[in-house]
Image (cartoon, rainbow, N blue to C red; front, side, top):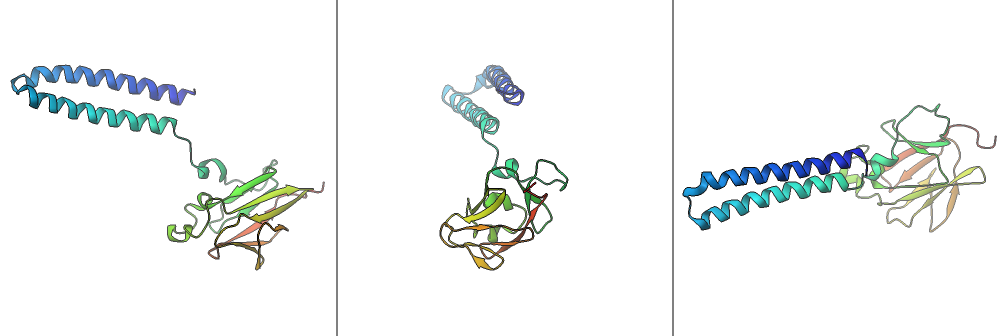
Length: 183
């Protein structure tokens, strides 16, 4: 458990304590109400508090989107980077591992939301093999092409510096090797 989660849990506990104190005081304020009306008001307040608590816990414990974890913008001089995909807005998706799966969430904010629907959740992957990078479409409905050549089935295509990748016939990105992989 990290500090953010611990702080969130403490906040939730304090909120519950304060809410119970307020409700206890409301009993005095609403003493003039009939029992049925008072119980309805208290139930409504408790439902609101429960909703706020559930939402707070959900925000604390829910995983981050893939966009926040995988899309990075940085300078080409980064020593750990091996290749990058240059997006139309000049942001980069760094390819720095053995396998990188790229999908719809990687292009949030790059193209309009109506065009995003044509891109698969996991649209294609780039694999590093023998100091080369290969691209493979992940059996998507709208496909992937490299330099105008459509990738078929599980076909892997070797990427070269400067290749143009077209995703779902809606988005063009550029592949760029950041340093000579053979050295």
